[in-house]
Length: 282
Ligand SMILES: NC(=O)c1ccc[n+]([C@@H]2O[C@H](COP(=O)([O-])OP(=O)(O)OC[C@H]3O[C@@H](n4cnc5c(N)ncnc54)[C@H](O)[C@@H]3O)[C@@H](O)[C@H]2O)c1
Image (cartoon, rainbow, N blue to C red; front, side):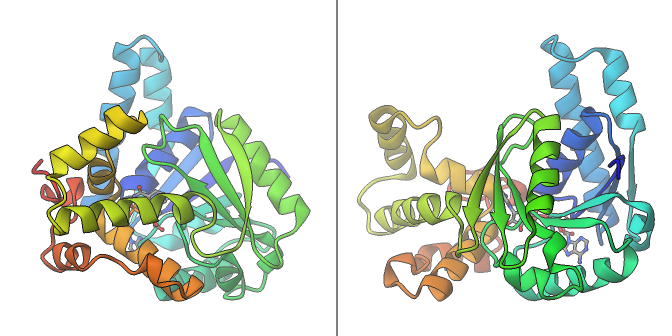
């Protein structure tokens, strides 16, 4: 069945980028969030991002207007009852996601694929919250979605080949490259990235270097496009902590223990860019 209407749930850092990507590629997009202010912010972010594409000559003004015309926002998940495909991008919390997948299973047509943008949570667990585990997969976009071309595709225990093929085809329609990973905590990307970010926070906490020094060493010394503390602020410190907790619990190795400084910053509401304060001030 042709996929025309995409539901995206969660309009935060990732959800707005995912919605933009699908709308730019010609799909009708319904963006859902529990919070109206997040939906307003998402629309403003998408408008800004499209404006930058137009300014750089990578998108025409007509295409920008058409993209915005294909996007609607709502606080009612029931609005996804006619979606052909759904991507979930709510908070990185297994219970919240499981509850949502059970609700989506009831709202959407039984043939609809339900994808999660989770960074670390088991796809098998999310699939088991539905009556269609063969149609549940991980579709892990990278931040910022409009610029990053990788999508990590995670196959749960019951995910069918057909589901992976359909989702991979959609990735290509978005101009992105799908890479398959198995359903282990943190998959490939965050199993490798998060220990580095965590170690950078330990190094800062122990006074090995200032945030600027740590980031500059990794940028100029390792040729990383941005330092690990800048990247952590960009991802969101609450998201980093949630992923490290999943890695620590799921793999049982103390090397994944979240740095106490990270815990303290999250408890203080210093979440990085999105809160205006993290390792740097925004
Ligand atoms: N931030 C990153 O760099 C990044 C990268 C890849 C994947 N991810 C993953 O993407 C997901 C979203 O992360 P984010 O950084 O966009 O988070 P975020 O905190 O920026 O946004 C989460 C949004 O979900 C909404 N929400 C919460 N519960 C909801 C519900 N039940 N129904 C509808 N909306 C709900 C919140 O209001 C908020 O707007 C997480 O699973 C995260 O691990 C994040």
